[in-house]
Structures are given as C-alpha cells and as structure tokens.
Amino acid sequence: MKRAAIGVRVHSGWGAVVAMAGQPGAAEVIERRRVEITEPKMAGAIQPYHFVENMEIERAEQHLARCAAISEKLALAALSEVLKKLQERDYQVVGSCILLSSARPLPSLEKILASHPMIHTAEGEFFRQAFRDSFARLKISVTGIRERDLEQQAQARFGKNAARVQEQIAAMGRTIGPPWTTDQKTAALGAMIVLH
Image 1: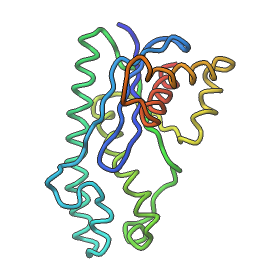
Image 2 (image 1 turned 120 degrees about the vertical axis):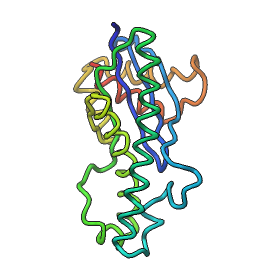
Image 3 (image 1 turned 180 degrees about the vertical axis):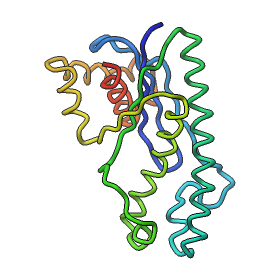
Image 4 (image 1 turned 45 degrees about the horizontal axis):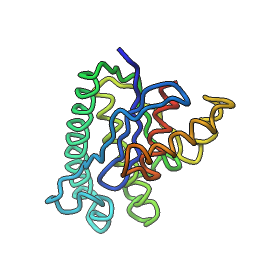
C-alpha cells in the first residue's frame, strides 16, 4: 500500500480536509473536501460557546455535550468515508495533522464564558476536538501543529527542500482547481510534514 496522511484546518462548524501522498517536491493531493460537523437545524451548533454564553452552567454544559456528540459523529462519518475511498485506491493513512491556534489549555467553563476572546478560542478547540476524537476512534495518530509554526516545522522536516515543498503546494490549485485557499494549502503542508 502507498502511504498517505491527512491534514485538517478547522473553522466554526467545519474543516478543510486534505489527504496527501508522495515525496517532498512530488506531492499529490489524493482527496480534499469541506467537512461539515454541525447539525444545521440545531440552535447554536455553529457557535456553541456563543450560544451558551448567558446560560446557567449546567444547561451550558448539556448543550455543549450535545453539540460535541453530533460534531464527533459527523466528523467520524466523513473521515471514515475518506479512509474508505483511500483504501479502495490502495492508500494507507499513516497519520494526521490538525492545525492549532495557540494550543494553550482552556480554563474552566465559567472563565471561558466570562471572556469573549476566550469564547472564540474555546470554539476553535471544540471543533478541533471533534476531529481529534474521530481520528482516535479510527486509530489514526494525530499531530497538532500550531499554524504559526508550520514554516519552521517544514524547515525542520524537509531542510533545504522546504521552500520547494511549500511552492509546489501553493501551485497545486492551478492544476486541481478550486477550492485551493489558505485552508487547503496549510492542511496539505501539515499532512506532508506528518507523512515524512
């Protein structure tokens, strides 16, 4: 089987998922998609911490738990489908990368809800956790890389070829077409770092 890795860049309620294979400088996008991990009809699903900001803690925890269960279920279903498609094409996923923001530990729910910037941080982590838990259930190792450290990690992994790898990833959009934004490019670079 050929080796592959998956990179994910997360937003509120969805993630850009890119699977990569090949060698540095000869990388290939073998799967990419936007994975929605919220129930559109569920109130407060896309911004769960904003939704519970003024609730009593017990109700807030219950809502967050319901949202988390649904998000993980949807992420697991989508990632399972990606894995199945890749296995049918003779690829074995050897790891995954989830791009992180600051990667600081979160305080208690009370402290999160008392700080609007912390609510945004918590929501990012909330949706990353859905992907992280899904990869764990699929027995795929997860590497978290802070976005601001991507270039440094690429340099450490690829040495003098780092710039060429990043240029190749940036240029892939011309051949594979849209969407090929920062979401897909950074997810692809994270996947290549994990792959090698």
